[in-house]
Image 1 (tube, rainbow, N blue to C red):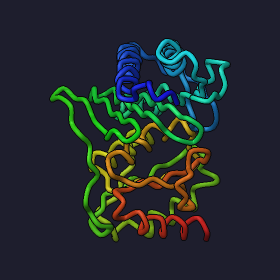
Image 2 (cartoon, helix red, strand yellow):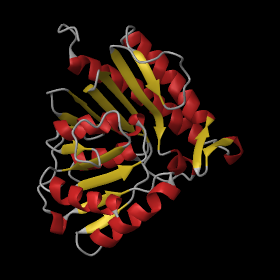
Image 3 (tube, rainbow, N blue to C red):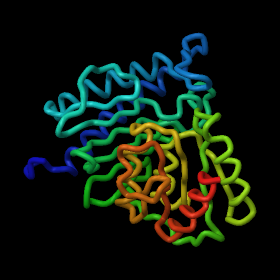
Length: 271
């Protein structure tokens, strides 16, 4: 990447684009109708709001960095991957959005090859913007000002973990059942939030101590993964590799419990 490009300035520009998309999502939710929901797959939904948000985001990012390509969830642009690539989820947590259940978010990352340079997650319901840039730390802008994010210091016995339920239930049901069986009662507690992007931001902010999920897209976790890493946490795939950007699984923790959670995940998926 051109060294003259200031990643902090770029990240703040992406925050503005994400906020505008979030305002659109918030306004549309007030008049949203279930009749306008489409099924992509079983229990995997999309609406005109996802597509409208993505179009706004893509247009804004093109102006911000014209030379970059795109990977987007809803495929509203024909632009492909480039030397620099935006990875966009215009509405992470669509099922939550449909049911008016927080959280749901906009997620935008910038990649150079497999390296994540910028990550922004805007949580619509609480008006919180999480962001990070490579080697610049991780932050959250709220109505109370700017907070620097830092992962927790808890061990596995006291850990609050997030285990999600991806749409690919046939492939994942046995794994998630083994994960819950192994962890429930042996850690602080287990939660589900319905948004991969926000699960990662909750790890970065110290709300969760760890999070694991499989069968998710790059757009779901790319921005949040950088935010976790810049907040002092750890991110791998289900095999323990830090080369996770091309895969579909994430194990993310405060770092202290990474190996503990990975061992449980590897055992659960190998049975």
